[in-house]
Structures are given as C-alpha cells and as structure tokens.
Length: 198
Image (cartoon, rainbow, N blue to C red; front, side):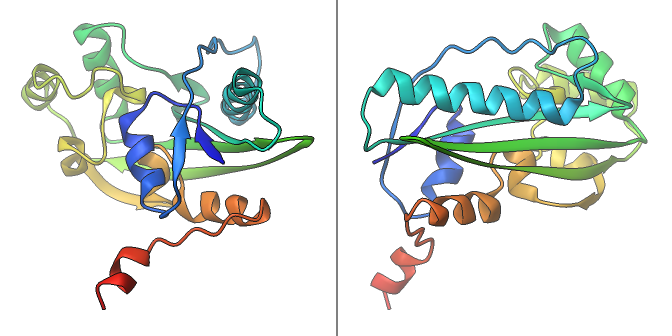
C-alpha cells in the first residue's frame, strides 16, 4: 500500500488528486544542508531520508512510501521556512523583482527499490513594496512555507511568470509523481471520480 511520509496538508491534498488510496506515516527527519552541498542534492537527500524513514517505521515489505521536499532557492541560497515575521519579510524583500527557483524532489521507496525525480521551476516575482509585504506577512500565510510564500494562496498575485510545474511549487509535482507511481505498478486515476459521474 502507498504511504505518504509527510505532515504537509498541501502535499496530502495534491497526492489525493491522483485517485490512489494512501496512508500517512509521520517521520521526523533533520533538514540541515551540508556545507557546499548543491541545493538540488540537498532537496533530493531530504526527500529520500523521509521516504526511507517512513518505510523503516512501517516495517512492511509490501509498503511503498513517498517522500518529498520542496525548497525555494535564490542565487544558490536555500530559503527554508521563516523563523518569524521579520525573517519572512526579509525573504520576500529579496524575492521581489527577481527570478528564483523552486526545487521539488519526490522519492518512492519500496522493498529493495527506490526511484526519484527532481523538478526545478523558475518563478518570477513582481515588485513587492513594504506595505504589500507587511500585509502578506500579517495574514499568517508565510508561516511554515518555504520561501515565506504559498503560490496556491495570496502569493499567486506576486507571480509575473512561471516556467515549470505549478504543483511542484505547491509541494508535489503531480505529473512526475504519477510516472514514478506507475513504475511501481500503481495506477493513478485522477479522473476516476469524473468517470464515475459520466
């Protein structure tokens, strides 16, 4: 059975769109980037650590565990979740009028098998003035979000251009995840509900 090794409600909602039943397994994996570790390598490593920790916690050979990680990167610097409101505002100020990368990694782990994919999406922000940043930070939405923003929320108003996967920026690249699931013999059916109603 498929399990999601994540506490993220956004990732859970995205995975549910693929029409497969899945359970959840809570894991506690340190997210500390190594010195000189490339951002993409770091994101992939964390996603893999989550998937393997989930598989080990379940202790079932028939389990398939999905781990994922998404980070915002600007000029090679990984923007994690903001520590507080001031940190969130500082991140948004740096992202203003710039193109940054959102790196999202997905790892599937089963008995004796592991597959993965890494998706990089370029996101360009409009000019964010101090009042806009202050209002957005005060909304509470940046809390717990990589890069201090949620593209599926109010921050979609900041985006002037995006090249890549929207769902990857939210937290789980759906097309690539579906392909990985198929490689494990699972059959995503995102349109099953629509078929049933036809």
